[in-house]
Length: 196
Length: 209
Image (tube, rainbow over all chains, first blue to last red; front, side, top):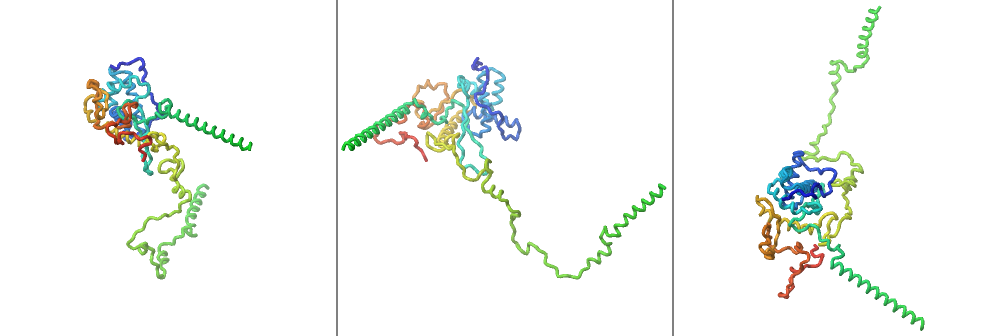
């Protein structure tokens, strides 16, 4: 179905990775940490948009990217890949989703498959506690309304911006013409006065 | 000769032990004398100081014992610069990273999402999420979800929706969640002469405050 392609021979991350890991509270040690990350990766694949603390999100993001990238590279007939999917996805119906929904969706994706936004700060924050940053983590191509605001006002070639530019030009041309007329009248008046 | 010297040394050592007791290196008198020394004439003794006389049945709080230095007082009052969290500066600080949202006009931090816009999106997302979860069950997930609002299913033929997992929201599509940016945002209302405010979009910034 999704066999390995020549272009996908290298599994690579399309996000900037920080040189050091993010600390998570894990009383159960390294295994507890992986358990937490598995839960987050499963939730992200399942819900496609989640809001959580930055550390866990940033850490789980890399693993999700790697999982989808590997799935694209190896396809579903690769035994180690299936073991990896079985390990990272706690709900086994999502293994189907990874290969049947996400792989076709991201087949021609050039960038990363996830997006991360800083969630708005909660005001007023508790002054006695340190504030922990929250983020929104999502898969691209989800069915929800887009998070990023409409940035069409920045595009100069859009019709309303072209019209506004033209209107502005007309306005200043008219203003300049009025100014010139005023100056002409003043010079005429001054000449007449000097004649008298 | 040697024997004689050693005997003299022994005698001298014994004498060293005796001398201090004679000249008061150990000033305590022998025991029978101590009894005599304690026999004073009786003096009217003062009442010993006790807190009970002062406070009776009440109680005392702890009080500061040492003076706080000026540095400590100022640090407690103003806080420590360049420290985050509860130890940081307590005075009001300028926040030069506050921006105005281009979509709704609300204030938000430069690197964060606009709280007003995001709250709207979050509510809608959660609603859709709940609908999707209801239909998930334990079946393998093998189709893309298509979210449809009221009256959108009838726009296409039934064959078009074959092979798609459709989640229907039982309400009209929100105006800001546009399916197609090129479609008209206002509906023609030629039949009714009264202006339907709900059907027209008010110019930006609309919902401030």
